[in-house]
Length: 614
Image 1 (cartoon, helix red, strand yellow):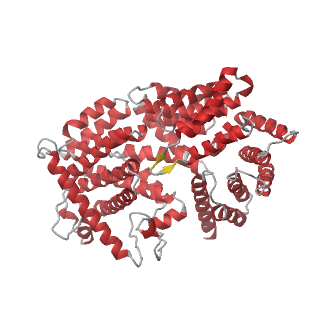
Image 2: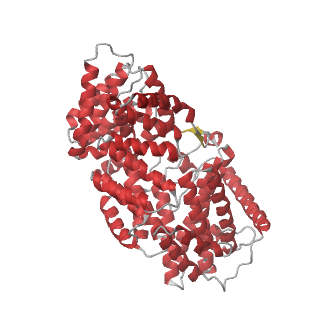
Image 3: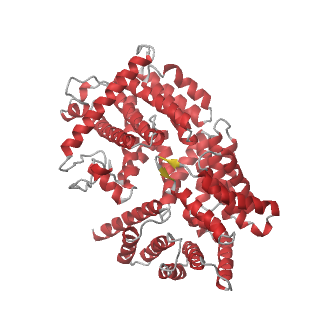
C-alpha cells in the first residue's frame, strides 16, 4: 500500500462532498481500478463459497416481509436503548438467516460488543456474523448480468428496475461492508488486511453514493419504506463526510487519491436531517451527532461542539429511554463539558449502574469519573476509579497502570509506606504491559513508558503528572469554569515556585519548567487571560534547545499560541504558527493527536478567512 501511494500522482483536490461526483485523476488509475475489480470478484467468490458451506435455509419472503422486518428492527432498537439487550438480540436472531434487517441488527449488537471489549474472540465472532450478514444481504441485491454493475445501471437511470427490497439490500450491504472494514483493521495487522479494509470502505463509499441516486430519482411505492431508506442514506453519507473531513491533510490527500473527499458542513447537515426523521437509522444519526459534538470535538478541536443540539437530543431521548445506558452517559458528558461536575458524576453513576450485562460500559463510566474527580482535585476518589480500571479493564493495562501511579503521585504527601512501595512497583510494571494494535504501539502507551522511566531517572518523582495527562486529553477546556480552575492553578503555582527556588535542580530542570509553563499557559488561556498565557507559551518555545526529552511540549505550545493569536485577530500569524508546528516538528510524543488538532484548527481558520473575503 505504501509503495503504491509513493508513485507519482496528480492529486485532484476535490471540493465536492461525498454524494456528488468525485473524479480521480492519476496515471495509474486504470491499474488501481483493475485491482479493485479483481478484489471485488474475489470477495464475491468468497461469499459464495461461505454461503455454500453455511447451508442457510431458503429465504421465505411470505414469512418475513420488508415491512415486518423494519418494524421488528425498530422494536429491537427500542429494547436495546432501554438496556433490554437480551430481548433485542432474541428478536433479531431467529430471522438472521433470512432477513437482511434481522441479520444486520444481530451483527450490529455483536459489533458493539467487540468494540467495547476489544477482545479477539468477540472481534472474530462479530466479523463472522457480518460476513454472514453480507451473504444474507447479497441474496436480496439485484442480480446483474455479466459485466453489469449497480453503478452502471444507476448511470443509465434505470432506477425503476430496482425493487424496494433490492434498494434496501444495497443499503444494508453498504453498512455491513463498513462495519466489516473496521473489524478487519482490528483483527489482522498485515498489510494485505489493511488494503482489503481500504477497498471495503471504498466499495461501501460507492454503494452509498449509488443509494443516494436511487433515493433521489426512484419512484417509491411506500413512503414509509422511502423514509427508512433515506435515514440510512443520510446516516451513511453524513458519517463519511464528517469522518473524512476530520482527518489530517496528508491522509486526506491519500484518500482523495483513491476517490474520497469530505465536507464537514454537509455531513452535519445530513446527520441532523436524519436525526429529525422517524426512520430506522434515526438512532444511528443521533449517536453519531452526540459522539461528534461531545467527544470528538472536545478531544480534537479548540472549539466546543454544538451543545444546543446535544441538549435537544438528550432531552428527547431520555424522555423515551429514561434508564438507557448510552443516553445517561452522554448526558453526563454534556454536564461535564458545561463544567457542572457534580451533575456529571450523578449521570455517569446512573449510567454505570443501569445495566450489568456489559461491564465494559462500566469501564467507560469509570474513565470519565476518574477525570471528573481529578478536575475537582479529589485524588482519593480518582484513585478508586483508576484502581478499578487497572484491575477490571483489558483495554490498555499499560496506560491504566501509569494513570494509577500518577494519581498516587498527586497524593504523595499522604501516601503510607505500603502505598509508596506500590507506586514504585506500578512504575516498574508500566513497560511490561505495552501492547501492539494493528502492528503499532499506542502513542499514549509509549508516552506512559517514557514517563515511567523518567520517574526513576528523576529520583522517583514527576512534576504534576496527572495534570500533564489532563492537558494531553484536552481536559483543560473545562477550566473556563473559575471554580474548577482555581484549585488547578494553585497546584501549578506551587510547582512553579518549587522549581524556581530549587537549589539542586535535576538534569531535567528545563523539561520540568517547560511542562509547568505549558500547563500554566493553557490554564490561563481557558480562564480568559490570553496575554499572560502567551508569555508562558513563548517561554517554552524559547527553551526548545534546552529540553532533553519532553520535546512534544514545543509544538503543543505553538498550537496554543496560534489559537491565542487568532483570538487577537492576528489571522496570518495564527495560520503560520500552525503550519510551523505541522511541518517543522516531528518524532515527538502523541504527534498524530496534535496533527488532528492542527488540521481541525487550520480548516476552521481558512474557512473563516475565505468567508470574510466574500
